[in-house]
Length: 94
Image 1 (cartoon, rainbow, N blue to C red):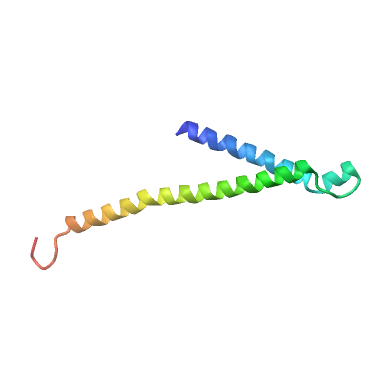
Image 2: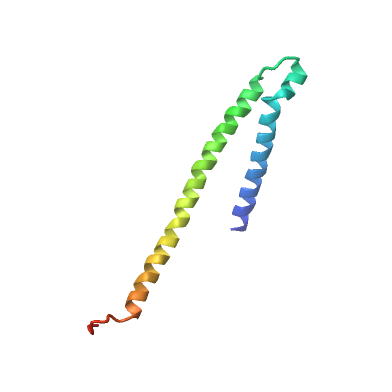
C-alpha cells in the first residue's frame, strides 16, 4: 500500500508539471516569446496529452469509487443480517 501511495503522489506531481507546461504553452507566455498570440505544436501536443490524462484520471477515479463502494455495501448487508439473526422475532418462532 505504501508503494501505491508513492506511485499516486508521483503521478500527481507529473500531472501538475504537465498542467504548468500546458498553461505556459497555450497562454500569453507564447505571445511574449513569438510576438503574436498563437499556439505552438508543442502547446497543442501538451494540451491534448493533458486532456487525455484528465480523462484517464476521471475514469480511474470512478473505478476507485466503485470498487470502494463494494466493501461498504457488503459490510452493511452482513451487519444487517447479523442484527436480524441476533435479535429473535417477536412472534415466538425461532
